[in-house]
Amino acid sequence: MKKIKFVGMLVLLFLVTFAYSFEKVKFAVIADTHMALYGKNEMKMGAASTMLVQNTVKELNKIPDLDFVVVVGDLLLDGEPWNLDLIKSYLDNLKVPYYVVIGNHDYAPAKQAKTGQAYVGVSKQTLIWTFQGHGFKGPNGWWSADPVPGLHIVGLDATRPTDWGAYFPEKELQWLDKDLYMNRGKYIIIFNHHNFVPWCDDDKPGGKFAKFVVDNAKDAMKIFEKYYPSVQVVISGHRHIGLRYKTINGINYFVCPALVSYPNKYTIFTITPTKLTWETKWAPVADTIIEIAKKNLLGKPGEWWRPSFAPPGPEGDKKMLEFFLGPKGIRDKGSITLKPVTVTVGFKY
Image 1 (cartoon, rainbow, N blue to C red):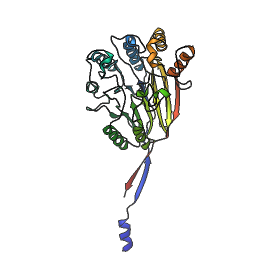
Image 2: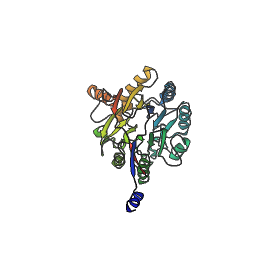
Image 3: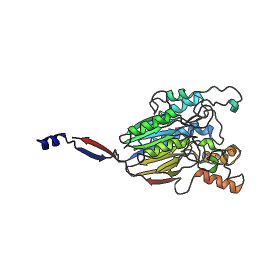
Image 4: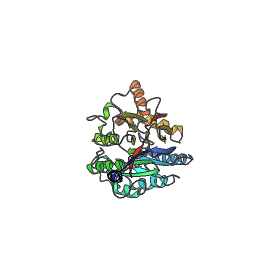
């Protein structure tokens, strides 16, 4: 009798391990379009920006197995309402779903010194509500979505309206932790306009380009690492340099080239359960446009963008071009191995 009671009280726990998986997902990343209907061709090719975006959308529509597109911020030159309307009309021509991440140029600049007078432009909320359903769900600048079963993408917002620096508020970090926890076991890709890692000494705290990196990036990086291997890929724009990546504690931090400035590229990523591959493609415009962008980068329009290690002159120009093109061997195409993602679930009987 005691034996029967013991068996009746026994609870068996079965642990089942499985993976949220998919065979292959292909997506495009467009960074820094800086749409400028009345712009000039300077370091940012404002006058060519409409052509750059229009033609890129047409090229993406030719890819039969493309699943979605992510625009990683700085859609606008400086928050102009007419540029917001224009770029949305172009992006709406995409045949696949697209998602938008907010950048520091996507609302009216806080510092009016740039124009010398009061500047009338859109607010962050205007952009967020304009692109509702393209990632954004409500008033927050951060969002998440599942474009295909088993793949979870997260769009973050580190923009700081008081200047063009970047910082994650505690509310967003708490949301991020909860969102990643709820989706652990899926493959998760993080998108953010600003960068998490410096790409040269000038990007480090105190450097001339320190605002390219999120001030409290390490707080977010700790959360990413907490959910490894679900999180293995983080993608940013903002820096206007060719594709490259750094691996820190298993997380691969990518920066993608800008469409509006040299080298005028967009990126196609393909992810499988074990590999991430990429290919950067030149914007489908006349070679003369690319050459003008290159000339402007090295000339007076690009002075502000010149890193400390590349002073003006033949040798400095060579170093600057190499930096903006990206490391040979990965800037045009490449791949990394991913650790398979599995989740263990218990069933009681």
